Amino acid sequence: MLQQSSYRAFTLRDLPAIPQIAALPADQRLQLQAVANVLPFRVNRYVLDHLIDWSRVPDDPIYQLTFPQPEMLDAADLSTMTDLLHRGAPAGEVEAAARAIQHRLNPHPAGQVDLNVPFEGGREVRGVQHKYHETVLFFPAQGQTCHAYCTYCFRWAQFVGLEDLKFAAREADQLVAYLRNHPEVTSVLFTGGDPLVMRTALLRRYIEPILAAKLPQLASIRIGTKALAYWPQRFVDGPDADDLMRLFEEVQAHGLHMALMAHSSHPRELQTEIAQAAFRRVRSTGTVIRCQAPLIRRVNDDSAIWAELWREQVRAGAVPYYMFVERDTGPKEYFKVPLARAHAIFRDAYRQVSGLGRSVRGPSMSATPGKVVLDGVIDVGGRPHFVLKFLQARNPEWVGRLFLAEYDDRAAWLDELRPAGGAAQFFFESEMDEFKRERRRQRLTLTTADATPLRLIRDDAARPGSEQPQ
Ligand SMILES: *Cc1c(COP(=O)(O)O)cnc(C)c1O
Image 1 (tube, protein in one colour):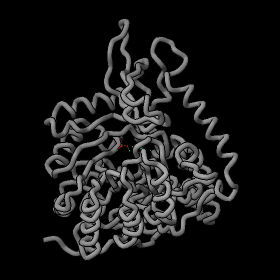
Image 2 (spheres, rainbow, N blue to C red):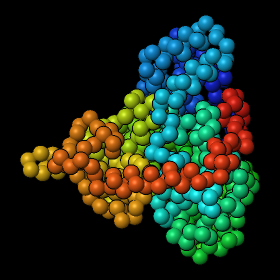
Image 3 (cartoon, rainbow, N blue to C red):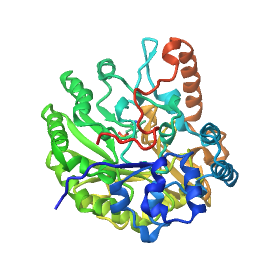
Image 4 (tube, rainbow, N blue to C red):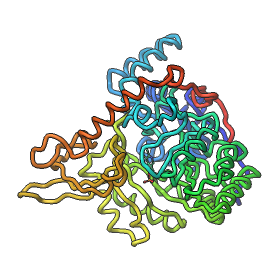
């Protein structure tokens, strides 16, 4: 029996109200509190009661996925924060210390704002990122939070109130105008945060104008979401869920492919009764669920977990899509898996699934020049090398291009690799530099008002203890 259940969030302020946390020793609680003042924290009743295995805490993967851990900060920062909290320092002082630490955690990876937000007529197109020819990312203003936060989120900065990093759009009109001007775009990807924190009526205000515009080149609308894992009730319970299913059907009635890009980190997320019901219901509308997640130490850095994850996805009728490399931001040191090991985990898991699971690609880095997959290790001139390939690229001509880097068992990101054969640069680097210079020049020509960072209309996320619409 599926029960009607209402959403209840737990944020920083509610930490002591979580019975399992209240039961921890005082020093551990203080540390948790200290880290949660720096990194985003939000869970909900479903995650607490159905996904976390409390008998395995702190090692439990879903606990690691959702609860800040002391080792996510370096020792000095952790003691700064615990000292402040211990002596009951004023909120302003705690916040200032947290800000200083946040700014040192590379809150702004891969030039997301500077390089990906397009200009049109001397203005920034708010809420839009356009990095790859075919696909536009759209960040609806009210979809910039989540049903629970992942500790490793690469967009973590927007959940701790570093507002200049938020992207948002007030209206879909600008998006539609942009799409009319860019017939190369065949796919619009709603992202966030999690756009499915929005009520369906609100989501409609963004999607319906796109449908009404009857853009001849548009082939798909996608929504990036973790709701199938963190709040599957979103798809199953109540009239708003019913309306969401109707909306998915309407998209397809307009001749477009409707896809959910599901953030799917661990097999346990797919194993609850309500999650299975959610997958069935979404699929019954014809919507295709494609699954992707980063490879994260302590959460899913094991080939057996990925093999099981991909099998569960296939069993649920979903499509394994990408395995990502954790980005170089936030508590990266805590979670990072070196590329060589990431590839070994991918390969060993890939070998264990049928061809239906091998639609997955990875391990892939969403780096500044594009999505780069590490395809394997090969011997050249008696020495091992990484074989890399662009799956997506700023310059479409780079897509599919293979290139070699010196093997390095510690490197964990593209910028830590060296080109093979002693070359000074990878083939794409001088063009990337030129692109960055050109962007800087264009930025200088923007109207000042438009170049200033956008503030969100509403941010429940930054206000501890707030509820949100499901
Ligand atoms: C991954 C990504 C996309 C979508 O890429 P697909 O390969 O089409 O799924 C679009 N824009 C950005 C910036 C991305 O990182």
